[in-house]
Image 1 (cartoon, rainbow, N blue to C red):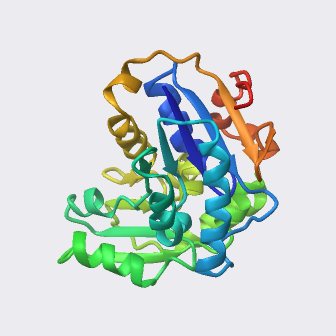
Image 2 (image 1 turned 30 degrees about the vertical axis):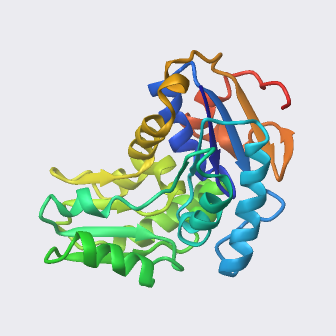
Length: 260
């Protein structure tokens, strides 16, 4: 079985590591875009073009499923990627875990990039899945960029700023950007680890959905647990900052797969 994951940078590490833990034998293809990142400031059409390029590079490796492990790409490019690759390759998007967080009864805080905070997309998720629940949207200025570059001081500063905007008594915290899951422990520590506080990321759920979407024959097949990394379409190694996180170190133990 082979699963591909797509993101502009290292935000895909959390879902990739979850897949590695669930199916150590699965062959993984990580496709990112260091030449074109960050995608956040780009127009929707530009994000779609870059995400499609990454998806096409991964598709050459004939994966059994493709995970769009990026909230921005899922918002702007998911339908275009599905239109091009499905039904041959199932495509799984990433949605902030607002629904399970709201099921706690709240209060809920949603940490997301400034571009996503207050957007029609996020407000729609809150309306559809958290109606009647107290939800606060918290813009996390610079956090994704700090995590991407493993800038420790900037990570601490951005987490502290977001924590200061999170109301006391918050019971559920949604990590609305895949990068944030890489520093979940630091986020919890910054909030003082209050009893009853739960963090809700998407990586585990997305990994599970990817495994459910592959065909039974592919799911039954044993892979070699290999890893191939595509950096703006070129075979390479994990981005250097990846090794600053547990998820990146877990994935770094795999050998590169052959070219397609």
